[in-house]
Image 1 (cartoon, rainbow, N blue to C red):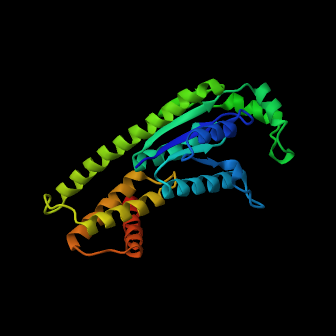
Image 2: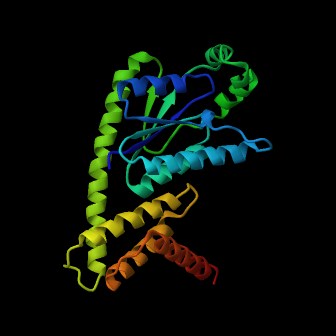
Length: 257
């Protein structure tokens, strides 16, 4: 899996989108998910809009596993970045952040050059600067000028390579563990079993929307996977989804007891 997830954050007007464009010019395979491009629906609160933008980007990331994904937004609180850190941990890829460093005064000056409908009030920019929480999870790079581009580009390449190796080790360990739990642990996986395994993993990953408990989903996946192998029959996608719903309901019921 040639994927890594990188959150690009900083105060409004700091140059996050410009940085993402420059990084894309270095590697055209990178995908940028800019929250600014998510249209606000009439009557929608900022919280609802942000949640929708987040879910759209997570779905898009799951559908494009072979590249570096750049998340472009203010993300001034660690809680705003956490869903993507959780997602990267859940699917087993590398996660990092890029902090675009800029003073409030310079950012306000840049922001005034934007179209009127995209401008941010100067006082709002200053408040965000005061409340900015730097990342404490994963590796972080700081971008101050174009002089930093080569260093950041190299870091992104290394992040992707480490992610591939991490994913490979995780998959090997998971497969060994799952094989040991079966009645015939030494029996190799058939092509059909591998296909169903990958399909089930894709569905489970798709269900991860930041707030989901990855441990519960992992347990559900393991239970269904063992049943599929034990029964020795093919399970179609709709049946997989139905079984996942059933197992999640069982889990919730058991938790409430």
